Image (cartoon, rainbow, N blue to C red; front, side, top):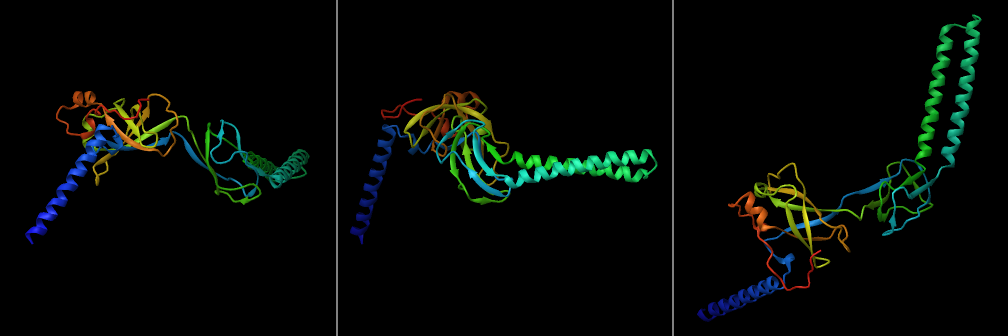
Amino acid sequence: MIRRCFGLLGVLGVSVLLMSGAMSFAKSSGIQSSDLNAVRGVVKPSEEAVISSELQARVKRMPFRDGQWFKKGNLLVEFDCAKYWAELAAAKAELEAREKTAVNNQELASLNGIGKLEVEISEIQVKQAKAAVRSANIAIGHCKITAPFSGRVVKTLVHPHESVNPYDELVSVLNDKTFEIELILPSTSLRWVTKESAFKFFIDETQELYLAEVLEIGARVDPVSQTIRVFGKFKEVPEHVLAGMSGSARFLEEKAQVRSKKSSFSPSSTPQPSTSTATLK
């Protein structure tokens, strides 16, 4: 029994040595993503949208595929709108007929041929016909969907020649030029974190370090986890960074000390000098 206990202690001792050695290696090699004192964050696009259909129609053309770049105003989706053009023509014809009827009724009323009520009803019918023309024009305006901003196609959700209904999702797009960094910080960090607070963000996928600053602080503290969402931005446009990449943020020590010398918030410590291949962007 005593030998077994000593054996277990020996195994635990070796495990502790291995873990401490691994942590020392991570620290010495500057792998911030494994630093327990760092705050995890996610790169998000400043603009993204899932564009939906406003019509019941057949998809005629989608010029861009997944991953392709587009500019603001470029055509994303075009529908076959022969049906809606025909409805517009019918609405215009109805409007023309109503207008002629209204003019004729006014002439008859001037000759006491009809009463005032008939004249008013014909004028109301003209207004209804004009509204129908406007509605048909609005439908025609949805036959082509253009890009609301410059960016890339995340995923096409339909294909040409497929029929869609109103509110069906068509294509997901995002702005790949401006990114935000979403961080989840302990609520105690509100004692020293402010807008424009500087921090360094190490991205796991690129293994590179970037300078950033706080853009906005969330409006509400989560009462369960006692955390708050903080949004940051890169000081320079990063290269080879994609939305969805994750990493670790380390806030500069000087900023934390100025706001609160008693703060024990771990991410306020300055990142240790490293000899890793990570480069500062």
